[in-house]
Image (cartoon, each protein chain N blue to C red):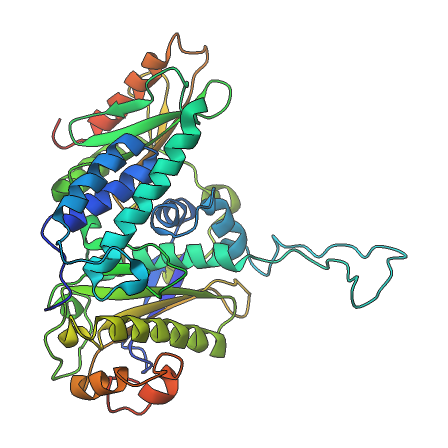
Length: 215
Length: 249
């Protein structure tokens, strides 16, 4: 038998990792449950006894689930989310995220693509949004280029897929970064302060809709 | 910043050298997602460890007057980069490089948890049968059918030269451990794997560099025989460094 993983298992496992990265523990647990349902009955869940790739993934699911249990036990007093008594979750059709408070009037969102089969369309939407948004000044703009231009001979297949831009379509402006993977980070500052957390979530939801190919 | 990437079969001469663009934001996010350790603000670490030249982020500390210079009380001379942080940056760089090189989708890269009790690969990556062709790499002739999911090890080292080679051998040793574990269930998959080494120090005389080592079996029957032997993992270099079992080794 070759090193194969049951159909659907990689998708739900990767989604659980993305959700954990975003701090979306509720959905992470749901994805883990879906992934576990796809693990073969014969797979060992003990990593020190693994004999296949599937055994490693099955053991990882167990380990992450235990970590989630511990986190949930500790998070009774709230975490970095926008407000412990407020819903920090934000989403569009294909993207899910979590909003955090990041200092006085500052907010931050981590989001991920929850439908991995549309990654190419997502990239197209991101490229379009980045092209129409305002450019973000980077360190090289301030400090000068680190390499002569003639060294930038990146071959097409090794091109940088990450994009960063300012979405100024609504108030307040939002700085958006989509990296190599289907992960989104966005920041904005509110002055005056928002009337409610819902206003902040609505602003970030608009950003998600602007790069969601299913919207 | 642009970082040179050497791609080779085993430990052979580079098949190709390309420049890879890595930005602090991109590697910070990727390493935060794909890395095994929980580290905050990896983009700032990338800037200090990799982008700044000649350890300028790690200034020497002034001598402390009257400090008793005894072997047991040596004052700190300078801050140093952390091996765990560097390792996490290496994991991020590995994920980015292979995603671009083999044109992988997010779903094709599975990050595996680190275990203290068993050596597991850092990643499993789903590579198509012709991925080397896609990456414009000339594969040796006569390679057996490759597995769907390849084990991938990420390594980081501070300096170039023998340290990079040594890090690649350590990664290879971990692949051998994996092959030994799956020998009974997936005997046709032994010999396949990738190790990526990220040399992160940025010196005027020696900039950061990446080296990808693609391991391909030449004689799987012989590899299987060797994997069944006792202490094959700790003796991996001596066992496999004979050119009979793997291409470029």
